[in-house]
Image (tube, rainbow, N blue to C red; front, top):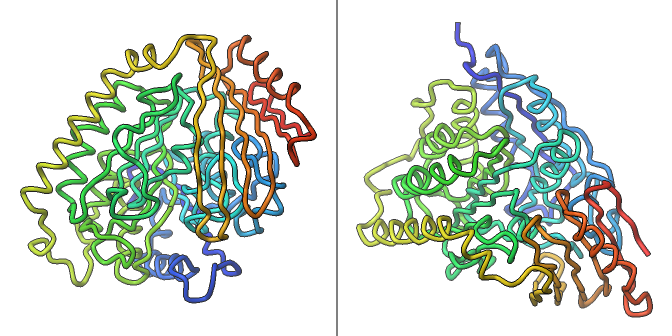
Length: 436
């Protein structure tokens, strides 16, 4: 009798009542076809594969990660709370050792949502993986976590949330930002002064095939993971790298996704993008599920799959190898790069401009980070949205040293209430959220 080698948990949440509009590529059918395929293949009849119902995240779960402006109900719907709750449910199942690993097949997605959220951008309002990671760190005391984002679009939201955090390794493999939204994620984007090299961005040229993706996993991602030694590995499992996806220009296949999953061995996978509703998602999701469960996935093949047509050119292969070498070099230099970033006790300033393409909001940010060699460093974000609010968000990292905890409260208490609509404080060591 067929039996899962790895006990695997699954959560489905298609979000029937939420869509940007009825014909938008990010709609409920993205998961309905997969659900049908999984039921048709009898996946839930296999011993060791367990379906969980999604949880619902609370405002406090969100507040560990985001400054939602002006508040959480203004930025989210119930579907967003349940989608993020699906990731939370799988996290609980894995961390409580009910299963070895788990896959949250949920929508709406989240990886374009940054620490400050004034609304929707890139189909995302709140960041499911980041909310889940902060929940895991608070609830289970886990220190080192790796997030590997294999969505075709740069995971700029997750990149932003963990930009200053040396205890979270974020690696994004994505189509080159010069050719696609959001236009970011270049090799030199390495993280803040206290965390250089903990954010690694690997842009891949259009036309990258299974060969190219697996080369990067084998020759870059896996060696770095072996050195970082995370307690938990999370996969932001976007599937829009598929050769049939209408929004992207890559040549990845269901077999490729399954092989990537077998190599990566994520503890938790969370669905992100993927918009080839019939031609890709049912096959890719099935391949990922079987790979996580340790079952044979060789029979999962798309009806129109032709590997000869999907081969990448020699020039693409050469570009991928050069980028891989560059990223490996940055990783090896990370300690030196942090030392060169500034002196402890100095403030470093970063300016950002962010466009919310879904909600047509333009945001300007000015961020000040306290340089520290003992932790991620406390920081403040001055954020002004047009249309919208002008806020200040202060963040004290979960593993903050005493000096940075004091600096965070100094930022918060000195903030001029007459200048801002709201002032927020994320005190992660105390797991508190304050507003004035």
